[in-house]
Amino acid sequence: EELRSDRALTLEDVRHNGRWLMYASERLRGDREVVLEAVRRCGVALKYASAEMRADRGVVLEAVRLGIDDVTGEHALQHASEELRGDREVALEAVRDHGLALKYISEELRGDRGVALEAVRQDGHALEYASEELRSDRALTLEDVRHNGRWLMYASERLRGDREVVLEAVRRCGVALKYA
Image (cartoon, rainbow, N blue to C red; front, side, top):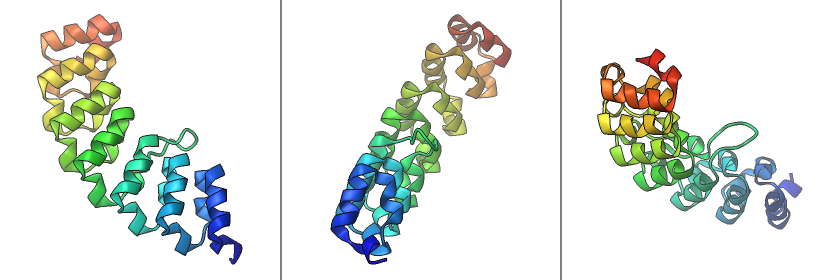
């Protein structure tokens, strides 16, 4: 326990692998410098940080820039405080490079057209996590199916019956017709 509480040793440790924050003492999991160093190496290391650090806007913004962990498939945002998952700037930063982070933002922001559009531009599959209202948004759905016709499957039932939307989806991917 003495070594896990050694700040210099822990800083060196997380510089090599941010995940190793999990081995730090509780006190060091709440040390802003240590946590920042960890999340700059591995955004998902945020899950090992103290609740106070998971609610620190600066720490969370750093963590979401790295986004998805290639090993576990987790996204840093899912470990942020509920309050920060409802912060528009944090949400935009998260979806800018990882559209599927839309899944982890607040329900309210899933209905924010700007956030959803940014997510869909990055990854059309993100439409699945947008609010029902936005999945019925014709312009957003057209934007989505222009990238990949298969994303028609996440559109509202009404739009899956819209000739122009379906035609655009089929132009991109013939199999999209099965979602009409």
